[in-house]
Image (cartoon, rainbow, N blue to C red; front, top):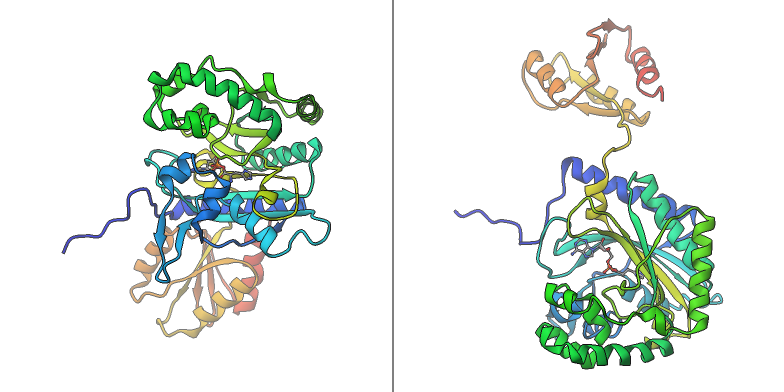
Length: 412
Ligand code: HAM
């Protein structure tokens, strides 16, 4: 019979990679909690129009990358391609704006985009992300960026931070007209999608991944020359804060992000170490989105990081606990093995009880193979073997052995 393979762009994450996955998520969760964010667990499936109205009709995500299907009740739904839209929907739908609007949420989990798979780019990938609702100060931009930096630092990941401002809605409108005129002159050089985008959403052309489009727009007018004084001032303030916190950054006037909802500050943390898919974390402000989705007028900002990309950059995992292997000696039905393993685990000691039948020799071989640091030969008079030094000691009872062992493995 033919073997069934995993679907293209989907992955099994196991062994050391699963450890890296957990390390990334746990590190981020700890920092989210230290910054007093609370968790929101969002659905994987949403009404398709949620993403059309937030991420934007002309974006690659909505145009080409969403997993859209009709459920058995005839609803048109999508597997979520990102988390912000759902967080905003929940903020409105669950009335999370009740206590003055201020709310800090984080989330974690799978996202789905039908992109061309390559290193660091998958069709099911995982994000950690956070959103802050109800503040519009540049201080909030600075704190969010600092939190992302803290996560990257804790993971031992070095990146460069690029920032830009997209200005407020009004000033962007002015710029879009200028850009549209510029693009009209270069129309012949653009891909079919971008030709259409000139009228419908010219900003998206600056984010197109097609090489000829990138080339045709290298000398395009830049947004910062058209934004309001107020937006410029808040951008200056943000830069001051970042400097004061010792966070270095690069101003990239071409950074527009691939989603439509952003206003003012946008940022990306980028690395050159993992090939073309170098953006590990990204985000920005979206001050008009809550209102646009039918909620109260609420400024907001957030970020998300790709867990798989962070995993590619994590070099060192925290030290692991020593493994203790318990071998029941007399026979497989020797209850002492079960009892000792149970007591060790209750003390927080990582314990593998050998469950297979076989000779003592074969069990020792297995203990070695799985990396046992200590072996306990479980019987009425148990013995403890240190696999590094080869020393072996016999005990009167299990109690004494467990005390000595705990002292050795829980020493740190
Ligand atoms: P995004 O830039 O689309 O933003 O995605 C954020 C991060 O998710 C990327 O920087 C990357 O690390 C990771 N990522 C995206 N697509 C893939 C993929 N196909 N395979 C692997 N990793 C991927 C957002 O999703 C926004 N919701 C961020 C945000 C939150 N803005 C405000 N709040």
